[in-house]
Image (cartoon, rainbow, N blue to C red; front, side, top):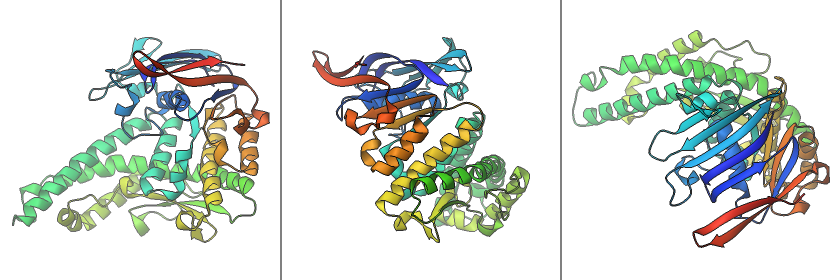
Length: 395
């Protein structure tokens, strides 16, 4: 798989840009703040419908513009598709495939698959559980685009059930009956939450069981002197979660069994949830525990070990996707400057085998020699309309 052409309009710093690309290595060079990361961010957005830098779409639209557009011609197994997404803050985004509108933007998911490694990935190791949940869910959707609907349905139910719990808790604090009208519909929402949550949870557990060996192997190659890395799913179900689920070699998770477990646990914590006004059970409360030896990586890993772990998560993802028959586009956003020589070499060795690699770097010396390829220069310029960016091929 590779991107043959990338275009953006009013995306971040770019009023417009058109970039012809090819299989192999393409390097975008430019000092910080010139706009090079904005281009690979557009590639990532077309693959996942989200940014690796911000949690909302509004910052993606150039100041003063009403909407941003990202488009790419994607070639996979000799077949080319043009995918385009128009981003309009405050309104529903629109998407097209081969210039024909589709009903929902998520229908474009799966056309372009990427694995993106960026400095922000250090938060996968050092950040809060939400970072690791998002990592797992994004990889889920990359492999099985239909799960975007499951994820969206679960998040919708969670918002509605959480709002009901808040109102129920407020009513209780005002002296209302614990079994009054404010909680009368909770049983219905429990059913919906367990139904959608069990599908999401089962998919996560199966994914982690497949991903973990790739991550462990990648980490051992990056840091052979370090303690062994392992991944474990920590569920809000606690010991109710069937033993072995989510671990390498485990049987596939049973959504019906998980649905029953969720319903049972929701009933058990009902009083606590109403008292606190929050939903205490479900995939939104889960985490992926990253360990080195007998200790969690968070709080125990050195800076170098944390970088190695973050990189191993991405390289493991790449290996898992590659094993399914088609290389994802590998995007390396300004990461070589953060890595020592050994980690640079290990990353370059994998990258050199990918069908397409997109790299951003501040200076050419940051890019390993084995990743020689097309070079583009990205510069910011001041015009009468304001500051903008320009890109041109130099090799």
